[in-house]
Amino acid sequence: MCALPARGSLESLRFDNRFVRGLPGDAAPRNAPRQVFGACYSRVAPTAVAAPRLLACAPEVARLIGLDPEECQRPEFAEVFGGNALLPGMEPYAACYGGHQFGQWAGQLGDGRAINLGEVVNPQGLHLTLQLKGAGPTPYARTADGRAVLRSSLREFLCSEAMHHLGVPTTRALSLVATGEPVLRDMLYSGNIRPEPGAVVCRVAPSFTRFGHFEIHAARGDHALLRQLADYTLRHDFPTLGEPGPATFVEMFREVCRRTAVMVAHWMRVGFVHGVMNTDNMSILGLTIDYGPYGWLEDYDPDWTPNTTDAQGRRYAFGRQPKVAAWNLARLGEALLPLVGDVRPLQEALESYSATYAQAWRAMMAAKLGLSAWQADDEPLVDDLLALMQQAECDWTIFFRTLVALPAPDTTMDEDALLAPFVHASYLPEGLDAGMRAAALDWLARYQARCRADGRPLEARAAAMHAVNPKYVPRNYLAQQAIERAEAGDLSLLHTLQAVLRRPYDEQPEHEALAAKRPEWARHKPGCSMLSCSS
Image 1 (cartoon, rainbow, N blue to C red):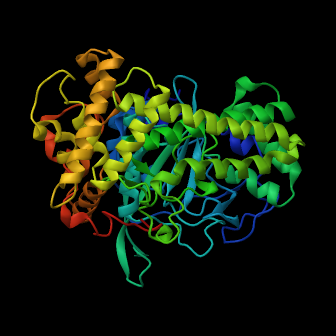
Image 2 (image 1 turned 180 degrees about the vertical axis):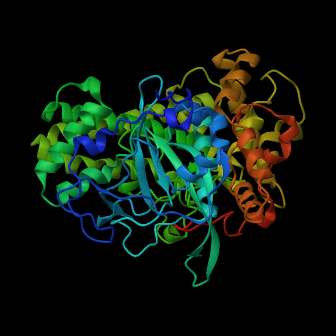
Image 3 (image 1 turned 30 degrees about the horizontal axis):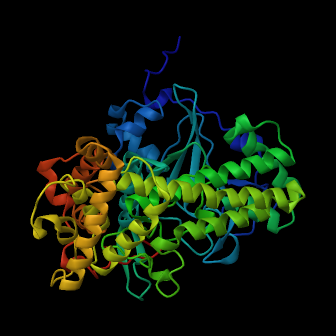
């Protein structure tokens, strides 16, 4: 009689692969770049690597999928999540989708270097797709090699989990595995191609369905396959909305609009810049997906983008993210139009995005300022603050965290102490000039008067502000330092950042240095300020 696998072991993971079972796959078995028609996916196995080795794992995600975190230390774990082996029940595939990139229709894109291993059913009955990024070429790889470098993989692993602990809707990351093989990359597309260490990150989400999954079939006029995909998505990702049909497809679109608005408001709250908000990088579940050339806002600049490819047009700059999300949603609405037959209900659903985002933005800014509720006349207070922060080059994270310590409105204090939030957060080497000091003091007086009128006790306001204004975020230069050390074989900073970013709202005085402003040397250093899509 065969013994049952131990609970929580790799061998005990149970798979129920609904996507490949419920949707048509690619009839051609050939793993070569090509156009794939009449299919939602192509079956393809990861390409084996020379020496898979675990660099980091997220215990919380291991538990989420029903795995004992100790299992991550087994050699078999690195073999599976490095792409060298499959567990019983896994049915690997790459998905077919299209997308608008930088505002232009790009045609078929698909999982060029991502391979879905299968859908694990966790102990609570939740389906979670395990996806390897950097596991080798697929039919959607075009001219690429399907591999990923340690640099980009570490950034994705670190940021995915940091975003979760910050309370931002996101895909998760289970593991980071080195491949033992070099990968040739041109980091800034400047002609400087060099070998970099390869790595594979395992991403986890209830679904990796993107706006582009619908766009490709609509663009090709394959309305039968579009309907199959919409039926599947409605039943599995939005089961409470009812049976598939024009009205429920509209409600599904409305819910995607709502979730996207909430997600983007969270991005703005913590100062996250996605960097490449193409429609193929937008999740149908309203999750942050595809951590490529992202960045964290340091000195406040709504026109800042971390993506070198976006440096000219700045389409995906921090301040433009809400409008880009609306534009992307409009493209999804267009893709769903053949199933609905009437543009008006889709347009009404799309309009709900703006209302939801505006409400979320106001609530978020009120919370960041410690106000119990947003009032109509708070808008000039916020607008003037943002203008001041930009003029004084104030660090987004440090300013709001320092503002928490502002004394009660009736406390007598000198100007320098009162100006601390602006002074401590400013990147201006010469400090605030007389005009900025006067403007900042005027704003602080207005803010204190608003707090007085709000009536919230000082302790309650401080606690509320601490809960939404993080002290620690995965700053660009910290991630780059962790990459450089990891490439040299030192994983200590990566593991330290992992631990600190699990508690981003806590003080953690022993790690105070990780909450400091960006050093001047990092202002223009590649990896710390600007990144490419290879990052």
